[in-house]
Image (tube, rainbow, N blue to C red; front, side, top):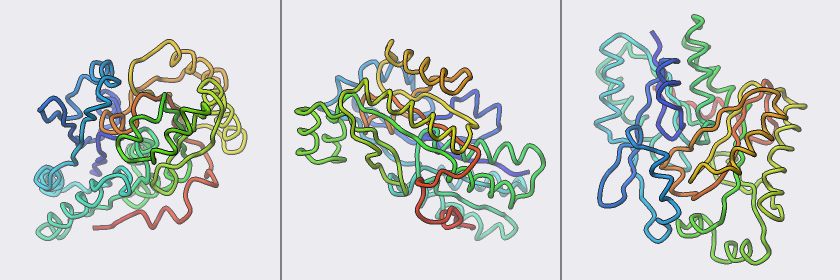
Length: 300
C-alpha cells in the first residue's frame, strides 16, 4: 500500500482527507499562552478574533522530529511506502524535517520506499498535489506514477489572494514599512501569489473590489489556456458576505459549484484577513515554476 502524507497547511478539511485516505501532519500555533494543534482547532472561531491579534500575532511551529519519525515508522512497520507532500521549504522547515525523519526510519527499514515532494506552495495549491497522488494510488498506479501525479500537479495549479490590508504582512516582516504605507496611501490592493516557493506580487490593482474582479478574470484566462480541473475559494478571517459574492463570481466563470474553505490558521496568521482562490488546471501553467518539478523531490 502507498500512504499519502501531507501537512495541515494544505488546508484539507478532515472529511476530505478521510475520504481520500490522506494522512495530515499538524503544525502548531501559539497564542494566548497555549500551543494549539492546528488539526484540532476551531478555525472559524479563531478567525473571528484574528483582526484583534494584530499587536500580538500568533507564532507557529513545525511538527517535531518525534512526530514525523513516528508516522514514517508506522508506515515502514506495516510494509507501506510513502509519498509525502509538504508546504514550501522557503516558507517553513517542515519539508526538511520530514526528509530527516524519513531518512532516520529508512536507516533501519532498508525496504521502506519513500519520496517527499516540496510543493513550493501552501493552502489548496499544496493540497492539489496530495489529492492527485491519492487519486493515482486509488486506481492502482505504481509508486513512480503516484509520485509523478503529485509532481505534475505542482506545475498545473495557482493560488491568488488579496489581503484586506498589509498590516499583518508588515508586522510579520513579510513586506517593508514603505510598501505597507504605499498601499494605504494610494489604495493599492496587491494580488499575491506563490511563485518558486515564495510569496510574490502577481499584480497591483486599485481598490480591493477591482482586485477581486482581477482574480476572477485571471481564472477565466487560465481556464481558456489550460482547462480547469479543481477550484476552491479560500478565506482568512471572518466569512463575510463579500466572500460569498466572490464565490458566486467564481462559480459563474467556472461553471460549477465552488467550495469556500478557510486557509490553515498557521498561514492565515502570517497573512491576516484575506480572500483568494486556488485552482488546478489540466495543463501546465507556464509562469508558476522556473525549474523542473522533478528537482523538488527527495527520494529517501
